[in-house]
Length: 242
Image (cartoon, rainbow, N blue to C red; front, side, top):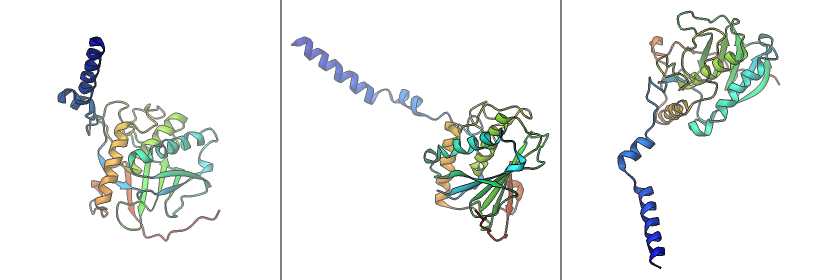
């Protein structure tokens, strides 16, 4: 009987310790390692509207049949964490296009000369806002024709989608801590095609800010990251034919 009482008492002590624990130990365990500039990218400017269902079109003549599935994987990876990021933004492939589309919540993937030797960017986001604010009306991800490696394309598109969701480049971040890191060479994957926990945390932060206020387009274009090509546009929204 005494043994049973002793074991019961030990059980409660252990359980109490698991709940309470050392405050300092708990802080270390639950604290986020996502320090901006070290493991996490800064928050940028452009975002799709919260809960937007973005329609993705690919200029089919610009890509091989082998490359297209890798493009779509990048979109699938970001859509898969839309609930975790709090953005609610999902991307769905709608089919091929012959040119960039300007319909509401349309994103076109296409080829174009964008390679920059200084930054080693071989892809670029071109975002357009008819409201002259940070909410994207339609956009294009432009991929340099020299970028042909399938995995590198997937990583690069995943990186550009980060710009679509409020993230900036982070060249000082630790390797593989974020997909917003710099690419070292053309046609060499950076090893990150899925949003990291730090990417998810920062997108969540960006969309929390979006609930508070929507920023107008800045007069100084240099205040927006070079990885995001800012354009206000008054072009009428055109709904593509099925």
